[in-house]
Length: 295
Ligand SMILES: [Zn+2]
Image: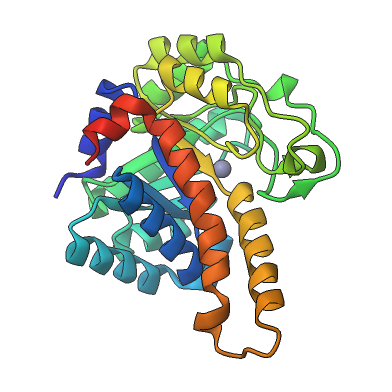
């Protein structure tokens, strides 16, 4: 079985990015895994601290590992937005393939110092684990926001990105390049789209040479996503779009079966709704060449 590092390298060489989708239960996992198998491309599932609390860090890791073994399909597990070393170590011990160690809210020097310590501690437990660090400000949760935050002052520069990657030893960098967590209501309605700073992505890539993740991909203009991947983005995170599809699918499932009480008869509508979003995003991130090369 290929490692996550191999998969990222291969995707980068074919001009594709890996889709990262947040899950917090088996409905979402089933939808993401089913879509990836259909499109035949590797996939990353991620759980933030809150999502891990709900699903259980050890149990969800065991479930995904078993799924990967039985199917021989490249599905990988990421500990998304982890804010303390304790929670990071817990995920490393459970066997997560990668971790997003996110101290971007701290002053830059403190972020560098603590991320470096985390990289050393995590690699000591799980040497193949990939560690991602974050710089800049891309707003808060994967929710529906009423107003857009001012992201202009938190944008990452190539100089700080280079310094961060070299000083910490992270494998993956998450910069602030116009992206934002969550979606505005107008984005959920499809009336507006997020736009990215493509030139900034290209300059950060050439300064660092590191793998790069785009957080807050939900509601982003499709052409900007294609150009961001061509400029050096290797992983794209989608969460809010899945949450919206999950809720709509669940409501449809309940409306369609008003007297039903068996979860496995109601929940497939939620699985289908999420699966459609994941499939279309995976096709976009992989490009024609990526899909053709597949797994
Ligand atoms: Zn994120």
